[in-house]
Length: 430
Image (cartoon, rainbow, N blue to C red; front, side, top):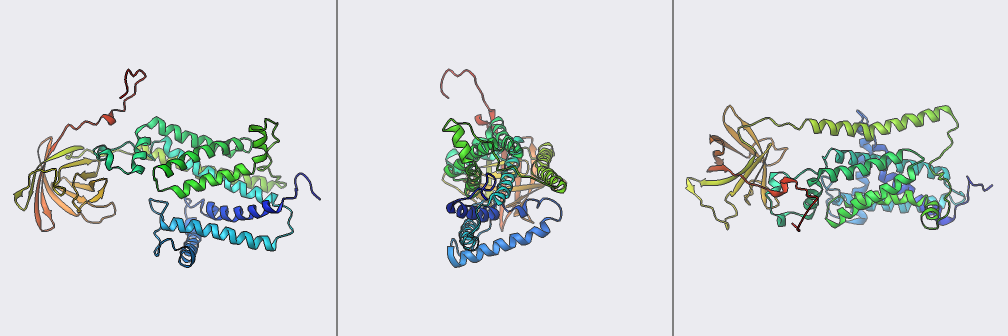
């Protein structure tokens, strides 16, 4: 018998639901939500290996994104990321077809849709809390360091340019994080979930457009977040249209309300909700706070700053400065263990027309070593250093088989951007 709680769904809605159920179950992957809890990841890792295998095989047979897939790393838009997206979409289409054949007589999926919306809603909560909290502490986009300030604007990629735009202003980053944080809080309560979904949609739509317009390599993930929010909005489309467009009274939202008839169900619901809050909000908040209060660097004889290369000797031969010589070191920057040099010397990790390295000091032996990457075990070059005065450093060592002597003078390089200017009254454009 058809009732308000047991309506008959049209065929098109049942087919669409089956597709979304399979796709979102694969995409939001509730199996991996609690990987941060000790020993949980030892079990869930097998699910990750299974999806990686499926993606690799599907790519080899059908999609051919790349012959060899590159796993997701700092970029979420790798060939593995795209192949995974096509695999999930293909599985959702195939699964919806098979499901529709074998489950033709079912009139609706009201209860199953409740669970799908519930898990999807908490997935948005997890993501919004995670990214919102790190922005509250200014840790997602940081203020440009000396190396980045010394990089000409034209040498920056759009992604890095946009990162600096947000990282420059701590209040703006705090505001954007606060919007994500508030959206997550609203999504936690069934009475405010509709407002939370509307707010989350606006927040993630802005993120998606930034990623698309500035070539930020998190396009897939941001599009999926918007897609997920739109799915939740679609479930309330009737009442939202009544309220916002037709200017009619909207019925009470019933999607997130479910009758838990037994006490153990109600207790389990509360326990799981508290666990999700701990994993999604409390742990990230504690980690971000701990990191923000522990960023102290010990004083070292090599002061932070921009150093001009006043003398550069290779194999006992002085090489004078020339703007056309891209290999001679022109300036060095030292800042809290990270260094960079204005040179195309392949000894360094080249980025934004500068060579980057990490440096370490042995003050007892007066040795200064350069590493190319964080995970490098050995220094690629070591120098004997001296500090004739507070603003001068000399370096002497071997670059491969060549002897190298470099004299550095600390400059009073001033960057206007580092002043963080703000004016209520501006008599002219700057």
